[in-house]
Image (cartoon, rainbow, N blue to C red; front, side, top):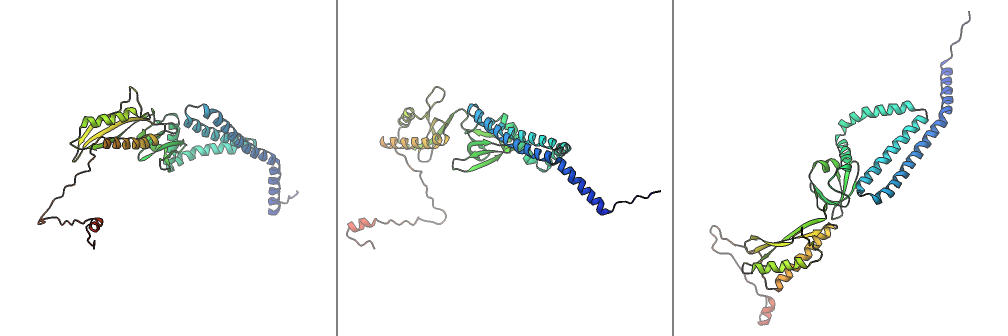
Amino acid sequence: MFLTQEPSATETISNAVEGYYDHFLTVLPRIALGIFIVVAGILIAQLITNLFKRRFLHKAEDPLMARFLAQALKIVLSLVAIMIALDVAGLGGIATGILTAAGGAAIILGFAFQDIGKNFLAGIILAFNRPFNINDTIMVDTHFGRVKALNFRYTHVKTTDGRDIYIPNSDVLTKPVENYTADGFYRVDFTVGIGYEDDIESAKSIIQEILDTNKEIVHNDTHDNFVIESELATSTVNLKVLFWVHTIDYRKASRVLRGQIIQQVKQALEQKGFNLPADITELKLYGNEEDIPLRVRKDPRDLLTEGKNPN
């Protein structure tokens, strides 16, 4: 009967290391090929995405949708390249485990990061159905500006004073969205006050002529420009001026042009002798006050003319 000597712990560890080393040398080319596939796949995904943007964005009627699809295409192609690389490297089990773990993690993370999940789903919905397009001027809640981009988690809006605001897509989807440029027209208004002694119809005719002769104001059968009596105020009869403008450039149409019309109306009314009175201020005495202390001070130039010392 022969007795076999069991290997020592050192020999066992050495044999295991050698075995792992030999196995590593065997799979090393496949791992290197997998890494190459990942790098090449990401580069190809970027190339295809850039090609898609150049070709499709110029012809697309919906640039926001085109950009959103380009982002989605890049992510999908990159994930496909990673899965292929894992399979080539002999790590198909890992790929399957990653997909299984991703499914379970999605449920857990869905509760932990509800806001991120809501914004992501809202971004997908907005990509296919939304009340605005790129360069539209919108208001969401208190945020007002021009739409610059739609991403998976937020909508990028540029305000008229140069600020960049990133609104969560869930807010854009659930809150009222005011689009000021959807149909290309916007009505502007302002109020001008004339004196009670002035002729209202004459003032309205002067203002109406300014509206009718301005070429930057919209003139067609659908959009009417007019002047109406708005209010009998304390010291003035207020006339409300309403006119339509093109909203290709909302800032210029709604602010710059509005200011120009206000200036023209003021000058025309003053030239025709209309009064533009200020508000009347009423002073009252209360309690035991008998009068209001009032001191009248002459202009020093008048005192010098009279030959007196202003001091």
